[in-house]
Image (cartoon, rainbow, N blue to C red):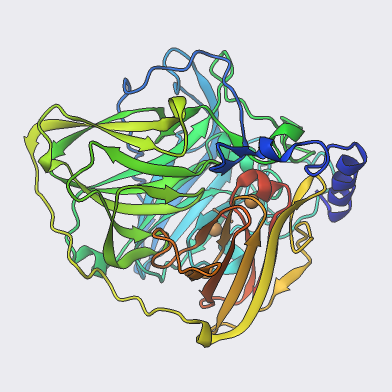
Length: 507
Ligand code: C2O
Ligand code: CU
Ligand code: CU
């Protein structure tokens, strides 16, 4: 949508009196006060929990390799799959599956992914957590059109390519759990909801040297279904061609009533009596999670990493809060359980069916245990005194959208021009829950109001979980590439309704 039509759109909503501040009572936007969003009820009977086994996304094989680069190919197209037993669901999928295939890269080797778009709409692919040059970062108007695409309205465009597009990722960065997902301006929420998300893991020698146990990637998403098994989503324009956004009741965010892990409803994973590394991603559009295992393992959830890779030292948690887009890397040792024990992963933020996430069933077979070392890596703490600039950013609703410092996203407005090689402090202030994410530049959480960071703030982050009426200070290290990048709220309905800004890094 052009700036002009976006302004007209935001204005029309205000005129019609459907502004968030006008028609929707505040309480509607906060479900159980732990997520900002509204529940979208499925129209089919919800499937029973713990009947389907946990699927593991396929690891994608490169189509070729040369001295420095691994080449991959992904086709984006409609696909059908059984998500709810006994029904078929149309997805928008990467290589036909949801989650998409997992890409595994090695630090220092370039990964080149050629995407072909066979969907009826433009797409944009972003590698979340990647330190990526601007032309491959998936700027929200750098579209990949399907062959023969004719836009149904004049929309603002950046660098447009048609048919296929190659994204090049140098991946000169620490080992970490990254993920890729659609990032088209104004339409990211419905595209991700339809299935456009996958894991991209980066490995390196430092992490290998720890000899970490075998891993299970767990992508958690909440979704809602129509009575025929198709996905429900409250788009104003279900063609996702012209008018962005969701119907007024869902402006705070869309919360599903079916919990999917790796695309399966409330699945069961059969595990051996040994240690596992769980790489957990909250890929929900708006739902925050508060994860806990029951019965608790002796050590609880032993967190070894976060968005930006390993923590300096492990942290033992009973519960872990995880906002949309955040990742938790944790070791769980099942060797203390009797064979046959059901260990349930709960989400303590919600009651009813959304209280349960998935289950691990412990088998007879013994597997290696793992002693988590006291030191995992070295992280130089960033401090306020290193900062060359301090900026204030206010994330709040306005009109029928969501604004940063009073402004809706406009590709031509630059909020900050940080110099590469410097550290800046950004003070983030909120009205509701806003998981704020920066592209390119990892950060550390310095403070929350007058207190220090929360237990889940440790390490290098790319997304901070901000709660209502909260103020936090983050120290950001700008490094890597010069160019234009976005930062935004990762509640995808907020993002689509304009809670996004630009920063331009300069040499
Ligand atoms: Cu996960 Cu700007 O994205
Ligand atoms: Cu990102
Ligand atoms: Cu938000």
